[in-house]
Image 1 (cartoon, rainbow, N blue to C red):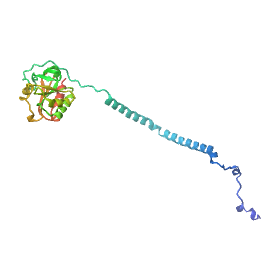
Image 2: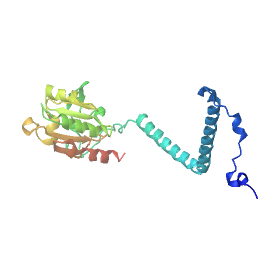
Image 3: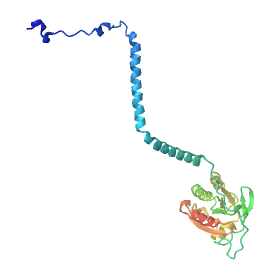
Image 4: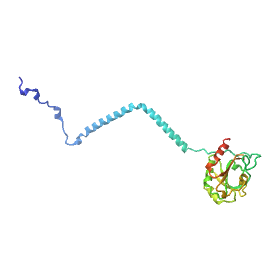
Length: 249
């Protein structure tokens, strides 16, 4: 019968001799090599995880590339449109003067023949340089910058010049307004008021305010349309007349 010393419950645990070789360094710097090796193993594990995710999602890669290429192509096209050269709208050239039985100054008839003084000296109102064109007959001293600028913009969109005609030999106020504009707006003086009388039957004055009579002249010198009592370019029929006249070319 075993005595108390041989009881298994009282057996002492076996001693692990591998711990006998464990050495605790006095300086933590001596463990740098082991720490570096451990960190390399962590980095390798992370790279393996990333590679696995990429392999799982590689099917969506081509779709993303196509979408990105489409976006880039759209941006390039937009930049070329905005930054590229813009073509200048060129109106049809002047044609020989028409022969018509309709009276001068009326729609379908010729623009009245008058000598005008313009930026380059005296010119005939029926000259080829003024066909096709838009004539704005305004009173002397017209403070109508907004109106003339609007008419100039509508005509410029179709490549036509605007001839602002004043029934006087000089008009500093209107000259100042026209000089402040661009887009092909020029000032002409009609000392006799021949154009205004033939088209409207009277010479315009500022007593009626800043009102213009807009005359659209075709390539052959005939009047395509007349828009009277114009105080606002946006409410005039100029743009529609120009598009209708030029679409026939």
